[in-house]
Length: 325
Image (cartoon, rainbow, N blue to C red; front, side, top):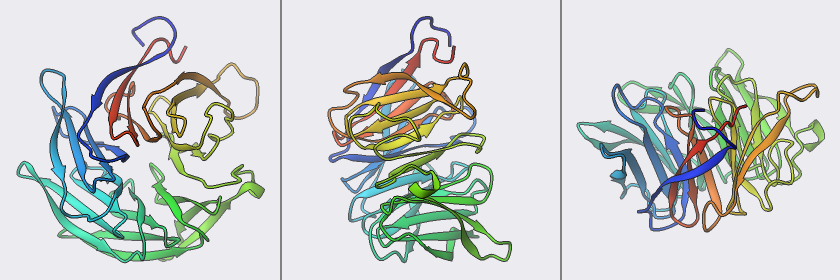
């Protein structure tokens, strides 16, 4: 990793500007040739902020997207080509923003959910968008020419609030997690009909006996981590509920929780146990002053981690040391 010694998570920047808790973060996967990393954050102040690094290395808020949602913005996600940003709100709508001519413009508003929209996710191809809500449903939208979106499926199956949706990084397979303690896997049957093809519950070795808050795939898509009070089968590292987990391109798992801490896990390749086994790489106590709602690795720099908190800040962290030795 360039630096010797034990792994260390060093706070590099603290980004302030949100007037309420920060719920979600999204790195632009394709910011453009020659452009540095671009981060979107959203929160309880009904706003979305766009952050970029200036020539002197400092991070600045370059855009504030507001006056479209009238309640908390709970989730944000960039399209794979980096040209569109979707924002999901407690006002039951999802907005689609396009960056053009140096400004962001709201080019579509997706309506249909009865209650708060909790999460939004783009498919790997960028042609499909998924949203989920407190109304227990998952909607799949297909992008049409001219920034039009058509709802092609309303997926019913969860019996409680659906917390998060996430597309597989390669395949058109969708995963949802819910207050009903389950993880559901959805797929198209080939005739444009979407069905639940697998349900993971505690009885099916999912291991979750309460709300499943979040999930993340590794970049190859052959492993998935889900979290609540424990992370996958990694238990005892956080003292309170885990709200977010994210896998880096180097398969380092970051988790953020209600104990204000960030934990990093890496695969223990020395283990003789069949199947993947992970070990705690480090725990950063008091990473924030309040609950950590989201952690996201930067796709352009796999050693840079962003975190969002109830304390209203976004922090950028640098992972140093021989983390993968």
